[in-house]
Length: 161
Length: 147
Figure 1: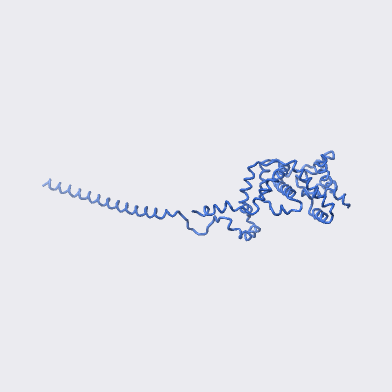
Figure 2: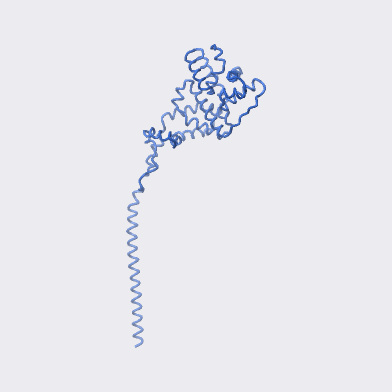
């Protein structure tokens, strides 16, 4: 096939927009490397195709850019899969592990604020003091009641005499 | 201070390498890519998700070193992603052969670029040689150049 026929066959357009088969794409790449006319035609065609798609360009909503910026930090997490391939890629990601926060821990301990310790001790000591006072006053009132009952009994006996 | 708080600062500033280049590519090519996606998926919500997906999975190095240029690379990528989404939501294929050369050209472009069919499959479906399918694509862009 002559060069001009090849350029006009449509295979270059198909290659550039990504619809050519693997074989055709390889053929175009070989031809591009070996034939300067095809290489030039391909370069010109790139400009035309970009221009073609730019005529149909639609500005996306501005919020999508911020969504992309957010997605970018989450990229590795989103791309994670639990297939064999995912397991294999886990080892590759070990080097970049410091970029991620470990959210799952093996130990069963929890971490609390440092002021929890004196607060806990104070509450514990106060609870013991209140318990001791409660027991003290309970037994005291009980003994007072018994004393009253005994005195009443004595008065009744004396009154009977 | 809990574990998340300890890493808060680290997280907010640990953008992956190429982040600024990616945003720069987005600024330059997103309208074109969005236009390509809308041609394939007219539903705006799906098209927007696809656009974000195109750029979040984009390899900046691959894009910049692509032999056919960044713009063509992004057009190809946007098309592939949009066709993947389109195939998930519907598999509608119009088999009616239109009358007239221009309509046939448009249909071939529709089937190949917007519906993801290979020239071989289109040739078989329309019962024409593959060379005619490729020629129709050539004529499609030629008519744009002449317009």
